[in-house]
Image (cartoon, one colour):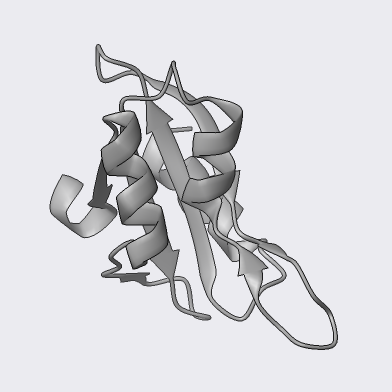
Amino acid sequence: MKPIQRAIQKAKRSPCRYKISCIGLNKQGQPIVYSSNSPRFKKVGGSVHAEMAMMKRYPKVVRTIVLVRVSKSGCLLPIDPCPTCARKARELGIKIVSVVEFL
């Protein structure tokens, strides 16, 4: 399965309202890890962002994160990282792009 297709499938399986996953690429541009958003608080809502989870687990290996957001019907949607994730990525020297820009 191609990396983008795998990320789309992972996003579709997310239990969160916004179906988001990401692909972590190494410095050679090869996919090395996948992540998706996960529920944080059942009563209040909110989730752990896919890119933040990836940056916390693989800060030295991942150089680019490709964000993937899909609609309930499975169509790709544009997405930008939140300010907190964007700031953390800058601090770590990680580039974040939307799958729409990446394709």
